[in-house]
Length: 185
Image (cartoon, rainbow, N blue to C red; front, side, top):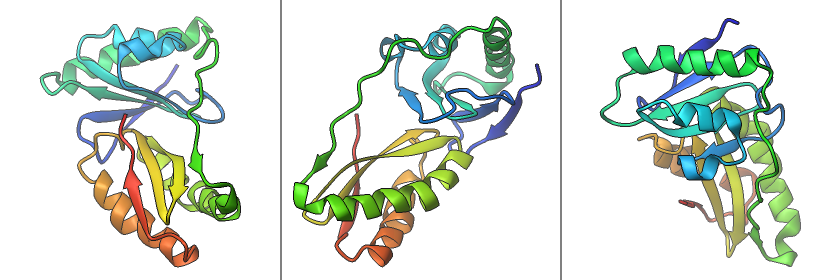
């Protein structure tokens, strides 16, 4: 199995492309090993010393390393874990992770649908290209709440992306949007 790797804007995160579906649809973010109980693949990646975060996308895996870990020794180990996982035809996810409730006023549902459509059509593809994802968490009083995942979660430029990129886009197309805030977990 040939697995491509790509750097991301976050120097602590590397994107792995196994050339096949990982989740297919959606994404799963595991900020630590305790949260990875529903993913045998994420658990295997966390077993490699130096791994601090795992993110699974439609057709990619991003891994974030500890500050003291080095990609030269970590990358071959991670390639092996991913290749072995898919070669053994093991499931990527088991069970179902609980979805977080969105904070949305009922009268704002039409606005929220516009926001989500813009995020899905214009923002998520670009963020996925960098090895991450963005998740909508709410809209109240003109404030959109979003959560950055994968490579974007710890990226030094994620706040600028939210404020200057995503906020400007949403404000342009949806006049009810006043600002965008990042939700941390």
